[in-house]
Image 1 (cartoon, rainbow, N blue to C red):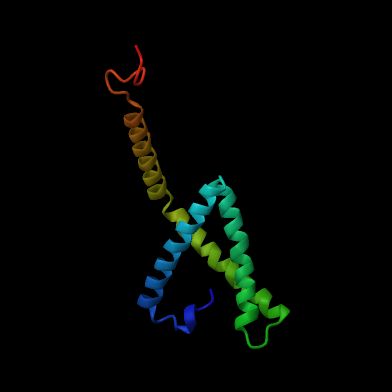
Image 2: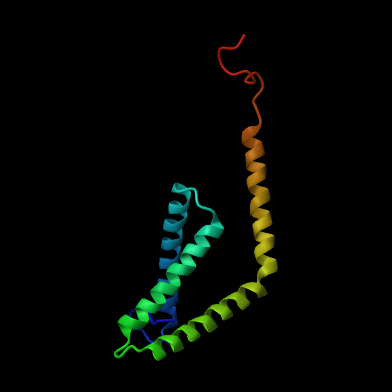
Length: 129
């Protein structure tokens, strides 16, 4: 991917810290937008993937001294390999992800059941006879 702020790749600590900070901030904004507009996670994934590809192409054109069709195609090939590596890594951790997702779902269900329980004497609400 394009280098962050021109920093060489060997300065991983600063890059990783900035990456995680900005990733979290953008994720929060995207999820708030999705919630405001009642958009599904899958729909958001498609939108973000489309935006990512567009941004990659813009970055190539803006950050390359002499952009060319062939150069863009090579950069897009590189991008496809990077995405493939990310997907392979996610697949390696699929079991852990599903276990965490199931645990989070169960926790949400338990919290919902606790909130749904009515207190004695409040079944009919205030003012009932």
